[in-house]
Length: 291
Image (cartoon, rainbow, N blue to C red; front, top):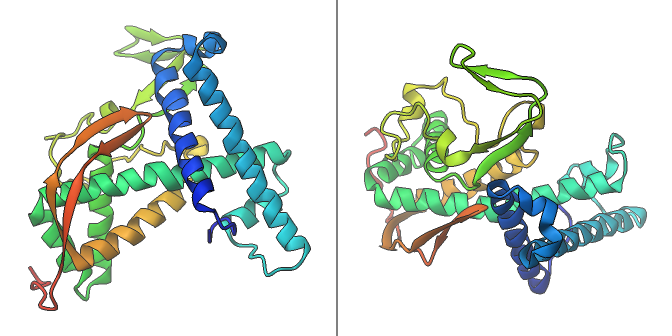
C-alpha cells in the first residue's frame, strides 16, 4: 500500500498472487526449459492461461497508475517519492506501457520472491540454531554495524542456498564468446540461460552448507541473484529492503524451530510447501552479545 499508494482489497490481493504465480511458472521456468512454447503457445492451454494472467496483471498495474494520477489531480496528498510516484512522474518513459511493465516487475519482486526468500532464510536459521543465536545476539547488542553486516551475510547465504527464482535471466549474445582457450565458442545470437542453482554453487566451498561467515571470509565474492549491470533487476532494492526489515525484527524477538520441513516446489519460484516453523518469544534475559 505505502509503495503504490493503493489499497488492495483481499479479493484483488488473492487474484494478483495467483496470476503472478502462473506468469512466473510459464515465463521464468517452463519457457526457459522449452523454448518452443513461445512459438507454439497458442496451441498449449497453460500458455494461453499464462498470457491471460499477464494481461490481467497489466490491467491491475494500469488501474494503480490511474488511481495515483487521479489522486494527484485532486491534490489528495499524494507522495511523489513513493515507487508509484517516481514511475508516474518520470519523463524518460516512452509511454505508459513501459510504466505498467515496471509496476508489474515491482509487484513480482515484492510479493512472491520476497516472501519465499524470507521463508527459506528463516527455515535455514531454524535448522542452524547456532547461526540464529549469533544473529540474535548481534541484533540485540549495541554494535549496529556488526548487526547490519551479520544480517546481510545471513540473507545472502539464505538466498544463495535457496535462490527464489529458477534463472537469473536469458540473454541473447551480441557477439561470439570463447571459453577454454577458444576451444569452445558460443556464437553471436545464441540465447543463454543462467540457472540460479548452478550459479550460486559455482566455485563455492561446501556449497550445500548454510554458512553465512563465508561472505566475511570472501567479501569479494559476487552475488548475481539479481543479475548485474544496466539490465539488473529493477526491484532488487525494494525486495532486499523488505526482507531485511522483517528478518531483523523476527530474529531479534523470536527463536524458530522446524516442526515440518514440508516439500520444495521449483516452478519459476522456489517454494516451501506446507513447511511449518514454531516461533518462541525470546525472554527479556538476553544472551551475552559479546559472544
